[in-house]
Amino acid sequence: MHDTNLLQLITDDFAPAQQLLELLQTESLALHGRDMPLLENVLAQKQALIILLEQHGRKRSEILASLNLPTNRSGLEQLASHSSIGEQLLEQSDVLTNLLAQCQTTNASNGQSILIQQAATATQLKILTGGEPPALYDASGSFSKLVKPRPLSQA
Image (cartoon, rainbow, N blue to C red; front, side, top):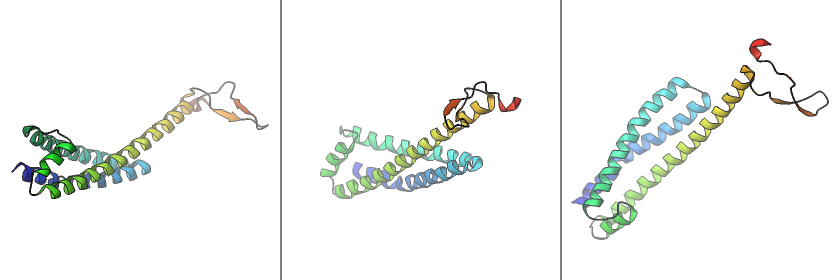
């Protein structure tokens, strides 16, 4: 009984996990294109899917804990060893795990993209507001800092 419930929870997560992966890929495109309306839409949808996946993950953990099994892969393997659908349970769990790993990889890549864009924006703001002078090459080709930079608003 618990094994069938667990299998159902795992298979129920395929669609939201796939949707999350597609949203993360769309988010990547929105970040690179700086498409803010699309990005806001993606973020709202992404949050709802993450909450749903977390709830299902908690339910799976609760089922394993109620059977006094570890709430990880080891516990699932122990349950599967005593179940008629154990092989299917492990296979479907692996599919979901791989799908979620793809989501994590894509999300990490999006995070790196955000950090790069933040650094570029911070540099641009420093130039515009007259912060630390940018290091430039002078007429002779030597590397030098400007003596007294002025913000672009005063140029």
